[in-house]
Length: 476
Image (cartoon, rainbow, N blue to C red; front, side):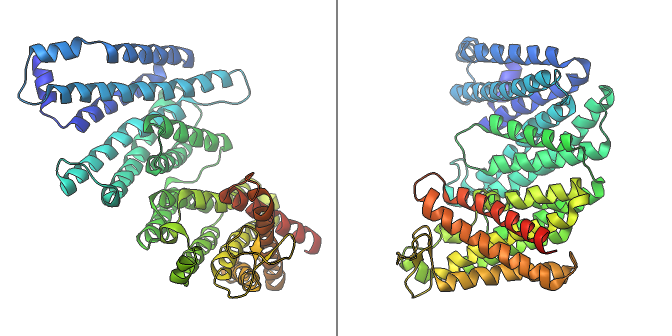
């Protein structure tokens, strides 16, 4: 005991905590040996024991009886922090196992291989990421820790490590549990959900939050993996890997050019992988066009917009919130395209409508605010101040048409659909009307505090999809 504690005392505080954290992942090997109820009981018991052990003074007393060269307090804190992390992780595991147990009484299922993959991401992946992050911090700032403006120097490498280690260990854990537990899941499906879960884990880890990563990462990854397991849809690992690399490269480009922050990088990667594997790569390029145009025109006359108080904060850098509020409708439609191929053409037009709405709205806002004419309120047509929710300008309306038309032209160039004239007209109309739905919601629900700006974007993009879908059914 003395030798073990002395070795631990010489290690960095964070390293000790992560060794305890990673060791907790070894529980995965026991998953095939027990049923869900037994695992849940063991998980709950472990959580209670850890909570009691954290308050038990034996370790601290032992340390003060046996002095070591370094700080006894740091060793105690390191062990206690590791126990606290394990306790939160056990809480997350218990929640997932409880859901799995309850679903056994329904027609649905939450297979143990998904929970095992989640635990692999949350232990091996998170611990590897923390090792890298801590090492980078020490390289940059010695032992003092990093300041806020330097975080991108170590957060990106650590998140990439979490993604890579998470994919490998989640796949191996899933294959182990499915193989020994006689679970009906193909290797393609196991790899598919491992990638989705790992990207989701990296995304949650990159989002600043008061919620402990040992709760947000496993629950977020677990729910995402379960959802896509339920679809029963998968592609070969080679195709999935290409989609992942392609999405990450494009997301990294957006990150380095200050179009997106780290959370937006992983949000875009998640969207990219799902959209590519459920539809086609051109669908993602189309969505990416929206983000590129948005980033470019956010910087259009930025100094002027900043001088009048209408410029985007952080230099127009997009976060995960902006990505999902403008792209959730597109993601849903891309998934529907893969699951319901019989409605392919209708879904394509709806997809074009939602992307056109997002593009048109962004260009209308970024270009329209530079107009030197008096804006008018969309609900009353009376003069309004620039930047007020629901205020529109002629320049902004033309910008919305331009952005929507670009999205209508690209699928014709890509060969996604036939009938160029009808495609461009329906897409432009859907985008333009969807943009004005956004303005209408801004003047009403957002003004009353019932919707945030992201909520307005979310609803408007679905409205744009609905409008284009209806126009397709009526005129095509």
